Length: 269
Image 1: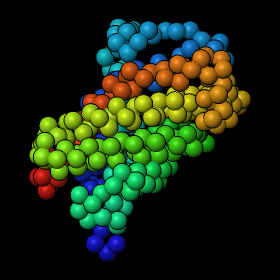
Image 2 (image 1 turned 135 degrees about the vertical axis):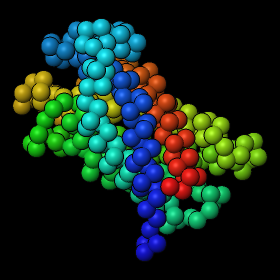
Image 3 (image 1 turned 30 degrees about the vertical axis):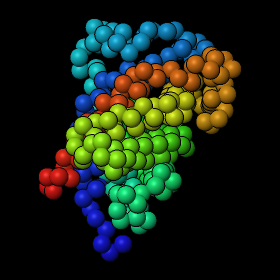
């Protein structure tokens, strides 16, 4: 570990900040779509937004363009911490197992992704809560377990899918180590991450908001409890509320992130 490479930490943080700024309005609409329609609480039962584009337009019309970037400061702070730690730990763990790209396997990459996702999300959770609503110390670790669970799923899926897709595209000779390869790989990992994480993401968002909604009563006691209650009261597809903005955010987010990250690696800044 004496030869720990600091560059993945720096490149990961910088690329995460760039990607977050470019996709933040979509993330804002995703959160609002997920919170609405909670039949278990009448105050959030109204369906105010019909979809991502309707939400974007209505927020812009009723609240102004700056509202689309409401909470951007803690979001960038989160990526400065979460993205830095996530990528740095992931790349460092991989190097403990393999040295060469061709030696990487899906299993090794998934293990490294899950571990780095849990550690980085647990450390960065206070800024994640602040992004959803303005709170202080007694709430900053609200929802830490579902946040870590979601991160384990997202990072454990996205980073391995990106790396394995990139590996096979390059080793097969279909593509070189180019921006097009990075684009295809990042698009694929964004779709995989959205499919795997959306149910946990919905529950996580609601858990971080529930104390503000109903005082000291917990609507959901945990991720599984939240999934079961949503399925019972709102139907299975409620677990995929906000899927399109989730994918439409994760897709561009990953594309911007990985292309930026790969370019930083080449520049060796």
